[in-house]
Image 1 (tube, rainbow, N blue to C red):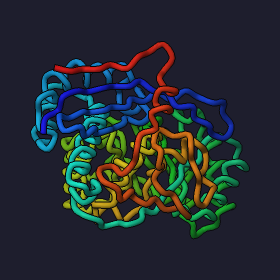
Image 2 (cartoon, rainbow, N blue to C red; image 1 turned 45 degrees about the horizontal axis):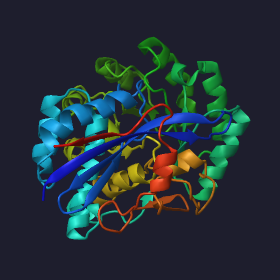
Image 3 (cartoon, rainbow, N blue to C red; image 1 turned 45 degrees about the vertical axis):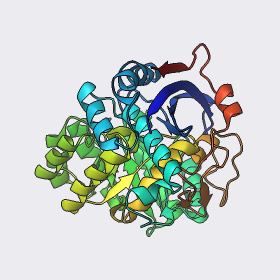
Length: 389
């Protein structure tokens, strides 16, 4: 089997969330064609320059100008270790693009063998995946109401956005946390995420004030590059520290472990470069006995399915609830026990029920493309890019 063509589609999702207008959320959808007629598909999810450092244009450019002509075309898609290693060598800091290609390759392999992706990467360890929900945007009362609804739906925990990246002051953050904790009770799991928005002094003061609210974790309180600061902060506060943006490459992960800079780690396939790289990443976390939570980039059913197979196949990833929400975030259906989503890139959106995600069991990713929706979601003013020999 050989790869014969690669297509990159710039798409933008309308995203609706409480307290905000409809937003255009950029993503890249990829098709990888083979000489046997099997087409693998992948998606970057939300391309957020402030989180991963890439854009819709840069992801398409690196796939179309480098990966496709120099690595993919003419290659056997089953040689995924070789392909991913070459993508890493030929480009730097392009994990979101690598992730989309990784998804398409695994989709091809699963379709060829007639098995779901999770059977290719370890089997079914987690047949259903407990979920957590990020609650953001609104007054303390609105946040508290959403948190209560989420927990009643079946979500295992809720997480609040805090700090400068969420455009809130420490005083506002305290009021939000206080309102949510009062509404959900003392036993419910409540976490915060600062997205690297505080400096060390701000984080120390803020977390000291938040200790009394018994938080599950404080995710990325400092900028991604300040691993030394995370280690110092961890020694000063009782709230468990979670590293997300700081833990991208395996080399970063090793630094965090060596410096004892985190109690918990956070992984996203788009952040670390797909399933193949994520499995190595998680193996190192497991060796250090550090639990790992997984998040998504808020994409369609394709991104959710890709991530779901990864979570389903990893026994270590079954230790914590996951933020593998995808279409639920796009369509704001978090408070529906069994949401029905019809306007997605995938015809058969992966199953969400009662606060759990169920990995698709069809061949490959197990989701099928809605071609009409793909055409409708093309980013205005942009066109697909097709690369062949």
